[in-house]
Image (cartoon, rainbow, N blue to C red; front, side, top):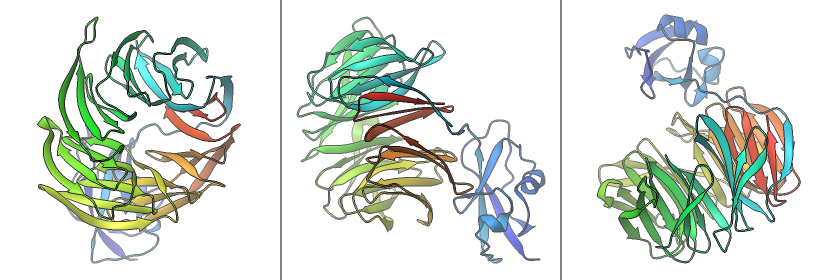
Length: 411
């Protein structure tokens, strides 16, 4: 029997769980249950090695490639809900045109749904009755993005305006500080958010919690071309442009860190993890940069055959998934770039969500697919009426929206 040297590493602070980080020799065929017992770990945690969840034995998770000299890092993460939806419970006519964005949000200890689309409306939904309780048409062009803040829902449109609503769906005010269309809005903290626009501007806003919801601009900076995506991780802000430039700033006071312009190709999506920036471009490149000090350098590149449209890092920061017009979703180990799985669609894929041990993807083929990375199992393929533009998921509740203007509820 062969033996391996292993060391545990906690991905995040685990409540009431102590992780022994000593190097230990274990048999290669040790099971997940035995590992938890050996290191006094709770049954509520999951163990990963080389990006693979340990389900049966350690050697199986290493794909039976045994290297007794190198220390194997076993990452300990909290297991969170990623139970897949199993059936379509309702199909509701939602808008008067394609629906472009959907989000779940919390209010009064309940979960609600907000949708927005090409009919210029932002709509608020009761999930219990699956009915709309508020319809707002404050925009005069497509609504492209939605974001939940502590006390507000904000929407961004191609008309260049940002609308602020309370969580009961009541319209409060407009923000008109950027031009040529709003591309992306993301929360920073509390009632602060970052907004990227087609005029190249990236602006950090704060909304006061009062009747007028006064708005303050904290900081801003400028790309030469249209912003394509923005993301935040801890104290770093990253934004990409259609001409291939990625800008990195410290979120506090927008202190400039560096520019990344590896190939001058349109960047469609950008994501960030621990010391990592990931970009996806029009040539099918997925580039992972290592952040160090005041700069970043290319760690590795992986490849799709066509445009990469969506990237999502799993909540544990161990793996990520990329979705492409080449009709595939690929899962990658963030540390090494090893391809862990491939999910095939019939046509172009528009979006992917990586939720612990569940991957959800959707696109032009009208399908919403769910996949379990730990067992490499295709769980479900839900058929909708037309192209699917967005999905949102929470605690076995799944919603899909798209071109046919319907809202699909899955349970």
